[in-house]
Length: 260
View 1: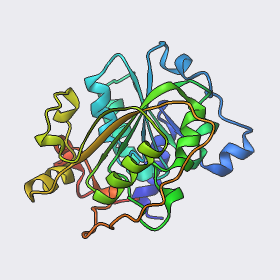
View 2: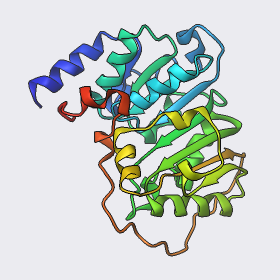
View 3: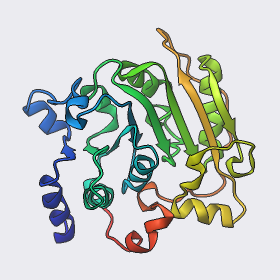
View 4: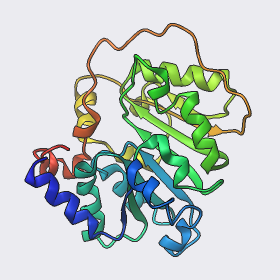
């Protein structure tokens, strides 16, 4: 591990808004102290929103700037990447932002039933070879249901036609109510503040004439789940690595940072 990464890990240990809980620590410490008590950390009863696979965390920070009446938590296992957003939030004095370094598979160990109102999944790896690794798979929906309010919102924003098609099929098979969906977000009729947030690589896709896909749906409670079995055409291009995406407003400052 490089000195730069070690320095970032050490730096984050001093951040009160960052919680580093890989599986080993979660097991040895007998659980997470803020499970079911996140509102005591934020010192308010505002809705809690997660960004899963937050990478550098700038999207989490920008959402938190835009919606000060909500609390945002970026979740990822790559700590050296997360340091960027954590430092941004700290320097800006933002009190509605936190970061959790852990495996997303363990998400139910950190939040109580009904504690989360929304989940954002922004440009994840489409995981075309293994369905259970897709963050919009039924495997993950079961885990999200354990922590979300009934009919809480799931947002997926992706450049991947494969993941977009798969997610639509998953939603249809499990009869999740769709709030909005489009295979060309920036040429749709949807007017929303979040359209002003574009990642650095998202802008590159748009400049190349590629489209951004988006779906927002409600996680209606279920006791059984149906995984799509349809054949889906795989993406014909290689998606940018999620860890290298950064919000365009700060891309020039972070693009050359060493990745975890």
